[in-house]
Image (cartoon, rainbow, N blue to C red; front, side, top):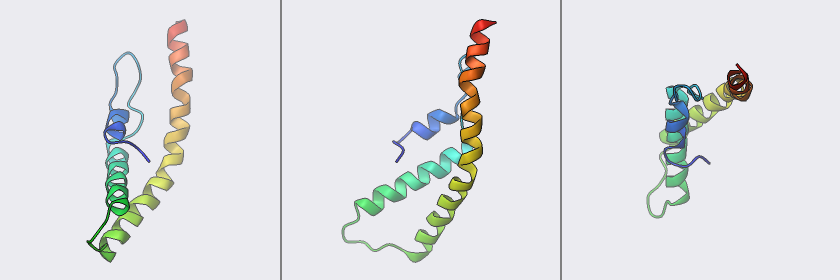
Length: 87
């Protein structure tokens, strides 16, 4: 799973270096999934709420559907960087 802050850094454009790699909405969804996983793994005495589990499940499905397009775009970044260096 993704570490805290990584998704946020992936969304930020670094001028002259690289574009933002993922949109803000995806970064937020990934962070939400990370927080839920942390709570689930470390849960002791509290119980999971069914409505919350369903909400996070919907986020996971959305991220899964969207990630393919972002991965395709991400694979273009090295080619763009190489082209820019050669120019």
